[in-house]
Length: 506
Image (cartoon, rainbow, N blue to C red; front, side):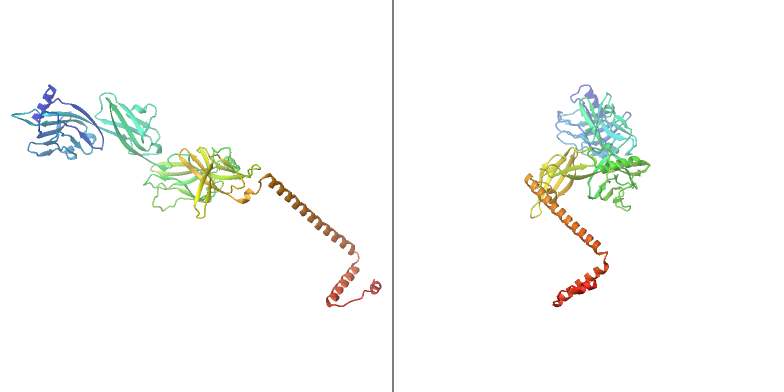
């Protein structure tokens, strides 16, 4: 202890080895190295050194090596650190995992013999500051208030500049950007992730990072999330995944049919559902018939996602998944967006027009049409053909067509439409149209003539019956003679015609 005090006094009075104040800032829980490099000292070989920690009232030995080579370690920090020492003059102190109580002043004193006389000890003084990011609650719940703090121990004397980042991006709310602490009034899943505090002091920077977990619905992370599905698609998932380890016993309900932000090209059925919803606001619409609730017995009870076995027209709209997390009710609203392809005849030269229609297209930034063809080995070939919402086809462009729609987060979904050959027979070239129209006129004329002939025959039969009905006896004789004549002709008997008996009977 005496040679340490002598070394410090010698350095202050301007001795050969001047004491240097070094700043070391380390994040809590991370390793730290307190430098003690005396390679520039005139001593040629160091045989003894010591690290002590100085407090306001006392000082304690961290580690010490004697001339004999024996190494002593103090209690507490000594068991979490090591000071190997080298003949090259590096006697740094290595701390495995820094704690807040490790912050403070450290003194490294190294003594080496000189030829013929005892040399003065070389001294290094290091200030260790421990930095950490802390939260008022270790785990926040959606909707709670939370305080975020950046703590440096011991604190700097001068004013420091604080910078905050969340998941690597600059975070700023009001004047909290340059403050050591601020408050989040309502925590959401967007606040989940790595919070980094960066401190600037005398041209140097240090930072600390801490992960914040927010209990609640992690997927989708925010309300008003859009789920895309094509009309007629099977097993569409409505996601509702809570934080792992929770058992929220979530319930599903439906807020509305249709979309409040649908484009002007929305179908008439969607407008009908909007009108029906507005006229019966006190009664929420029922869930679709193909809606399937999450199973009660599941290996992942925090996954409360629901499914639609088959998406039909009218299933679009807002759905709500809600569950209890500890003492707070947490819910997530999402919207099912349905997509379909509408086909309609267009001009003479374009027999068919395809339109890619979504019940809500606020996220859509572009459309893309592709044609899918197959070879003899059923290998598909995709050919891009257009980037508009509508696509005009000619009579030889039948087959499978796919409409893809994109947003800022990439491909949102697609819908497949098959155009059959029958759809292209409505129109063609002008000469083909005129010939088909002529054939159609001739066919219609023959059909009308046939109908007129049948009607004329029916009329003549009715007139004949009217003439015969007043004479029933004559009608019986005529029928009898006709039947007898037919019988004789079949038997090959020649009968001579005689009208006498007939006149007598009449």
